[in-house]
Length: 138
Image (cartoon, rainbow, N blue to C red; front, side, top):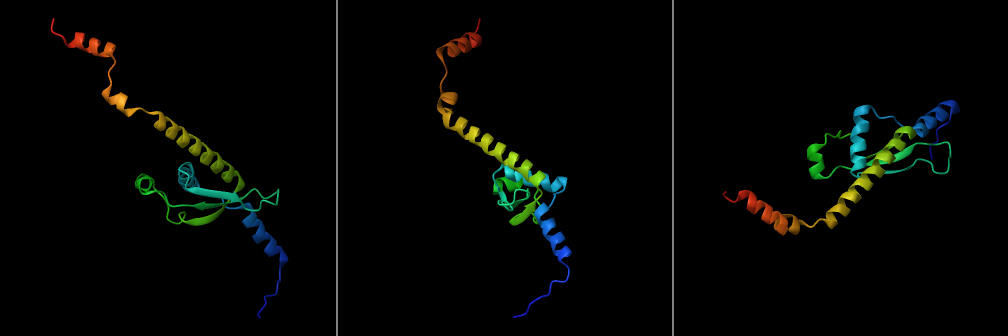
């Protein structure tokens, strides 16, 4: 078995700290990821849940559905990959993810209560008589 000697512990600590801090996305990348988070296509978990000082998150960015992909401009380097996200941006992404879930749930609730039949095929008598009097020749 071959082993590597550690020559500089300071360099190793610096590299570990870089990973612990995570990556900050630029504005364009963050907006892309936030849109996908709103759609529920981002899975996140704390990088090190046992370390209270580590605020970074692991984020897996899933490909959007075909309809969403038609409208969204996405970088292929971000899709289908795991990223270590800076704590501040991760918190913002969590808020976007939460609001997307809440808004989509409300949309589905409204959809389940929608009565399309009555919207398109039912006219109250008052509306019928009002439209008849408006269109009747005088």
